[in-house]
Image (cartoon, rainbow, N blue to C red; front, side, top):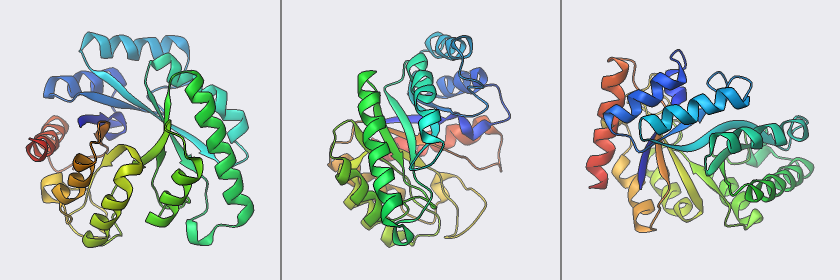
Length: 254
Protein backbone atom coordinates (compact mmCIF):
# COMPACT_ATOMS: atom_id res chain seq x y z
CA UNK A 1 0.00 0.00 0.00
CA UNK A 2 1.35 3.42 -0.99
CA UNK A 3 0.64 6.56 1.04
CA UNK A 4 -0.27 9.77 -0.75
CA UNK A 5 -1.29 13.31 0.10
CA UNK A 6 -4.26 15.10 -1.43
CA UNK A 7 -3.27 18.62 -2.45
CA UNK A 8 -6.76 19.77 -1.42
CA UNK A 9 -5.36 19.56 2.12
CA UNK A 10 -3.67 22.91 1.41
CA UNK A 11 -5.95 24.82 -0.93
CA UNK A 12 -4.33 28.16 -0.10
CA UNK A 13 -0.86 26.98 -1.19
CA UNK A 14 0.43 26.70 -4.77
CA UNK A 15 0.21 23.11 -5.96
CA UNK A 16 3.96 22.98 -6.64
CA UNK A 17 4.62 23.84 -3.00
CA UNK A 18 2.33 21.07 -1.76
CA UNK A 19 4.04 18.59 -4.08
CA UNK A 20 7.44 19.64 -2.74
CA UNK A 21 6.34 19.36 0.91
CA UNK A 22 4.75 15.96 0.31
CA UNK A 23 8.01 14.71 -1.15
CA UNK A 24 10.16 16.20 1.60
CA UNK A 25 8.25 14.49 4.41
CA UNK A 26 8.19 11.14 2.60
CA UNK A 27 4.85 10.60 0.84
CA UNK A 28 4.86 8.29 -2.17
CA UNK A 29 2.49 10.37 -4.25
CA UNK A 30 -0.08 13.14 -4.45
CA UNK A 31 -3.69 13.38 -5.54
CA UNK A 32 -4.09 16.65 -7.46
CA UNK A 33 -7.08 18.77 -6.45
CA UNK A 34 -9.35 19.20 -9.45
CA UNK A 35 -10.25 22.82 -8.88
CA UNK A 36 -7.86 25.69 -8.23
CA UNK A 37 -4.75 23.51 -8.35
CA UNK A 38 -5.34 22.68 -12.01
CA UNK A 39 -7.06 25.91 -12.99
CA UNK A 40 -8.31 25.50 -16.53
CA UNK A 41 -6.44 22.22 -16.90
CA UNK A 42 -4.43 23.58 -19.80
CA UNK A 43 -1.29 21.96 -21.12
CA UNK A 44 1.07 24.54 -19.53
CA UNK A 45 -0.56 24.21 -16.08
CA UNK A 46 -0.44 20.41 -16.13
CA UNK A 47 3.12 20.44 -17.44
CA UNK A 48 4.23 22.56 -14.47
CA UNK A 49 2.64 20.06 -12.07
CA UNK A 50 4.21 17.09 -13.84
CA UNK A 51 7.61 18.78 -13.82
CA UNK A 52 7.30 19.59 -10.10
CA UNK A 53 6.44 15.96 -9.32
CA UNK A 54 9.36 14.69 -11.41
CA UNK A 55 11.78 17.17 -9.82
CA UNK A 56 10.84 15.99 -6.35
CA UNK A 57 10.61 12.30 -7.21
CA UNK A 58 6.96 11.82 -6.33
CA UNK A 59 4.12 10.14 -8.22
CA UNK A 60 0.88 11.76 -9.29
CA UNK A 61 -1.30 9.11 -7.69
CA UNK A 62 -4.63 10.44 -8.93
CA UNK A 63 -6.44 13.39 -10.43
CA UNK A 64 -9.26 14.37 -8.07
CA UNK A 65 -11.82 15.53 -10.61
CA UNK A 66 -15.38 16.58 -9.89
CA UNK A 67 -16.82 14.75 -12.88
CA UNK A 68 -20.24 13.70 -11.64
CA UNK A 69 -21.98 10.76 -13.29
CA UNK A 70 -25.75 11.00 -13.67
CA UNK A 71 -25.91 14.78 -14.06
CA UNK A 72 -26.55 17.19 -16.90
CA UNK A 73 -22.96 18.45 -16.80
CA UNK A 74 -21.45 15.00 -17.34
CA UNK A 75 -21.47 15.04 -21.15
CA UNK A 76 -19.92 18.51 -21.30
CA UNK A 77 -17.23 17.72 -18.72
CA UNK A 78 -16.20 14.17 -19.64
CA UNK A 79 -13.57 14.75 -22.31
CA UNK A 80 -12.20 17.87 -20.60
CA UNK A 81 -11.59 16.00 -17.33
CA UNK A 82 -10.09 12.98 -19.05
CA UNK A 83 -7.75 15.29 -20.97
CA UNK A 84 -6.50 16.79 -17.69
CA UNK A 85 -5.87 13.34 -16.22
CA UNK A 86 -4.00 12.40 -19.38
CA UNK A 87 -1.88 15.57 -19.26
CA UNK A 88 -0.99 14.86 -15.63
CA UNK A 89 0.19 11.39 -16.58
CA UNK A 90 -1.73 9.80 -13.74
CA UNK A 91 -3.11 6.28 -13.75
CA UNK A 92 -6.28 7.18 -11.82
CA UNK A 93 -9.10 9.69 -12.14
CA UNK A 94 -11.58 10.18 -9.30
CA UNK A 95 -15.25 10.70 -10.20
CA UNK A 96 -18.54 11.14 -8.33
CA UNK A 97 -21.68 9.01 -8.41
CA UNK A 98 -24.73 11.18 -8.93
CA UNK A 99 -26.45 13.53 -6.50
CA UNK A 100 -29.01 11.27 -4.81
CA UNK A 101 -28.31 8.99 -1.86
CA UNK A 102 -28.81 5.28 -2.37
CA UNK A 103 -31.97 4.85 -0.29
CA UNK A 104 -33.56 7.93 -1.87
CA UNK A 105 -32.56 7.29 -5.48
CA UNK A 106 -35.06 6.98 -8.27
CA UNK A 107 -34.65 4.35 -10.96
CA UNK A 108 -33.90 6.84 -13.70
CA UNK A 109 -31.10 8.50 -11.75
CA UNK A 110 -29.54 5.14 -10.87
CA UNK A 111 -29.61 4.01 -14.49
CA UNK A 112 -28.02 7.24 -15.64
CA UNK A 113 -25.25 7.01 -13.03
CA UNK A 114 -24.48 3.44 -14.10
CA UNK A 115 -24.53 4.37 -17.80
CA UNK A 116 -22.26 7.37 -17.30
CA UNK A 117 -19.85 5.44 -15.09
CA UNK A 118 -19.57 2.68 -17.68
CA UNK A 119 -18.89 5.33 -20.29
CA UNK A 120 -16.15 7.13 -18.37
CA UNK A 121 -14.58 3.78 -17.42
CA UNK A 122 -14.38 2.80 -21.06
CA UNK A 123 -13.04 6.15 -22.19
CA UNK A 124 -10.51 6.27 -19.36
CA UNK A 125 -9.26 2.79 -20.27
CA UNK A 126 -8.51 4.16 -23.75
CA UNK A 127 -6.03 6.48 -22.00
CA UNK A 128 -4.74 3.62 -19.80
CA UNK A 129 -6.35 5.31 -16.81
CA UNK A 130 -8.55 3.64 -14.21
CA UNK A 131 -11.55 5.19 -12.45
CA UNK A 132 -12.06 5.50 -8.71
CA UNK A 133 -15.53 6.45 -7.45
CA UNK A 134 -15.80 8.68 -4.40
CA UNK A 135 -17.74 7.17 -1.48
CA UNK A 136 -19.51 10.23 -0.14
CA UNK A 137 -22.72 11.65 1.28
CA UNK A 138 -25.26 12.95 -1.24
CA UNK A 139 -24.27 10.35 -3.83
CA UNK A 140 -25.46 6.81 -4.46
CA UNK A 141 -22.28 5.50 -2.82
CA UNK A 142 -23.12 7.10 0.55
CA UNK A 143 -23.59 3.71 2.21
CA UNK A 144 -22.09 0.23 2.03
CA UNK A 145 -25.01 -1.16 0.02
CA UNK A 146 -24.94 1.61 -2.57
CA UNK A 147 -21.18 1.55 -3.00
CA UNK A 148 -21.14 -2.21 -3.44
CA UNK A 149 -24.11 -2.24 -5.81
CA UNK A 150 -22.62 0.42 -8.07
CA UNK A 151 -19.14 -1.07 -8.40
CA UNK A 152 -20.61 -4.54 -8.95
CA UNK A 153 -23.00 -3.13 -11.57
CA UNK A 154 -20.03 -1.83 -13.55
CA UNK A 155 -18.07 -5.06 -13.15
CA UNK A 156 -14.92 -3.71 -14.76
CA UNK A 157 -11.39 -4.08 -13.43
CA UNK A 158 -10.71 -0.50 -14.46
CA UNK A 159 -13.35 0.86 -12.05
CA UNK A 160 -13.13 0.71 -8.27
CA UNK A 161 -14.24 2.54 -5.16
CA UNK A 162 -12.44 5.40 -3.46
CA UNK A 163 -13.27 4.28 0.08
CA UNK A 164 -13.22 6.76 2.95
CA UNK A 165 -14.57 6.50 6.50
CA UNK A 166 -17.53 8.83 6.95
CA UNK A 167 -17.67 10.92 10.13
CA UNK A 168 -21.33 10.21 10.89
CA UNK A 169 -20.82 6.44 10.94
CA UNK A 170 -20.13 4.52 14.18
CA UNK A 171 -16.68 2.97 14.44
CA UNK A 172 -17.97 -0.61 14.41
CA UNK A 173 -19.97 0.06 11.24
CA UNK A 174 -16.89 1.55 9.56
CA UNK A 175 -15.01 -1.65 10.27
CA UNK A 176 -17.85 -3.66 8.71
CA UNK A 177 -17.79 -1.37 5.66
CA UNK A 178 -14.05 -1.71 5.25
CA UNK A 179 -14.22 -5.52 5.29
CA UNK A 180 -17.01 -5.54 2.73
CA UNK A 181 -15.66 -2.86 0.41
CA UNK A 182 -11.90 -3.50 0.46
CA UNK A 183 -12.15 -6.00 -2.44
CA UNK A 184 -14.00 -3.39 -4.52
CA UNK A 185 -11.69 -0.44 -3.79
CA UNK A 186 -8.69 0.89 -5.69
CA UNK A 187 -8.08 4.08 -3.67
CA UNK A 188 -8.51 5.29 -0.09
CA UNK A 189 -9.04 8.70 1.47
CA UNK A 190 -7.98 9.20 5.08
CA UNK A 191 -9.15 11.99 7.38
CA UNK A 192 -10.85 12.01 10.76
CA UNK A 193 -12.35 13.76 13.77
CA UNK A 194 -11.96 13.03 17.48
CA UNK A 195 -15.67 12.38 17.95
CA UNK A 196 -18.23 10.84 15.63
CA UNK A 197 -20.19 13.60 13.84
CA UNK A 198 -17.48 16.07 14.84
CA UNK A 199 -16.64 18.92 12.50
CA UNK A 200 -13.04 19.74 13.42
CA UNK A 201 -10.51 17.49 11.73
CA UNK A 202 -8.01 15.75 13.97
CA UNK A 203 -4.71 13.97 13.56
CA UNK A 204 -5.21 10.38 12.39
CA UNK A 205 -3.62 9.14 15.61
CA UNK A 206 -6.46 10.80 17.55
CA UNK A 207 -9.34 9.39 15.49
CA UNK A 208 -12.60 8.22 17.07
CA UNK A 209 -12.31 5.08 14.94
CA UNK A 210 -9.49 2.54 14.85
CA UNK A 211 -7.56 3.28 11.67
CA UNK A 212 -5.64 0.02 11.92
CA UNK A 213 -8.94 -1.91 11.91
CA UNK A 214 -9.97 0.02 8.79
CA UNK A 215 -6.72 -0.61 6.93
CA UNK A 216 -6.28 -4.28 7.84
CA UNK A 217 -8.95 -5.63 5.44
CA UNK A 218 -7.25 -3.75 2.61
CA UNK A 219 -3.87 -5.20 3.53
CA UNK A 220 -5.35 -8.69 3.85
CA UNK A 221 -6.91 -8.33 0.41
CA UNK A 222 -3.58 -7.34 -1.11
CA UNK A 223 -4.58 -3.75 -1.82
CA UNK A 224 -1.76 -2.12 -3.80
CA UNK A 225 -3.30 1.29 -4.47
CA UNK A 226 -2.92 4.57 -2.63
CA UNK A 227 -4.15 5.53 0.80
CA UNK A 228 -4.31 9.30 0.41
CA UNK A 229 -4.38 11.64 3.41
CA UNK A 230 -7.12 14.03 2.33
CA UNK A 231 -7.36 16.66 5.08
CA UNK A 232 -5.29 17.31 8.19
CA UNK A 233 -5.72 19.02 11.54
CA UNK A 234 -5.12 22.77 11.59
CA UNK A 235 -4.01 22.62 15.24
CA UNK A 236 -0.36 22.47 14.20
CA UNK A 237 1.66 23.86 11.26
CA UNK A 238 0.79 22.20 7.96
CA UNK A 239 4.14 20.49 7.48
CA UNK A 240 4.01 19.01 10.99
CA UNK A 241 0.42 17.87 10.44
CA UNK A 242 1.10 16.01 7.19
CA UNK A 243 4.28 14.53 8.62
CA UNK A 244 2.48 13.24 11.72
CA UNK A 245 -0.32 11.64 9.71
CA UNK A 246 2.18 9.98 7.38
CA UNK A 247 4.16 8.62 10.32
CA UNK A 248 1.02 7.19 11.90
CA UNK A 249 -0.11 5.45 8.71
CA UNK A 250 3.39 4.05 8.16
CA UNK A 251 3.42 2.71 11.73
CA UNK A 252 0.32 0.65 10.91
CA UNK A 253 1.66 -0.59 7.60
CA UNK A 254 5.05 -1.68 8.95
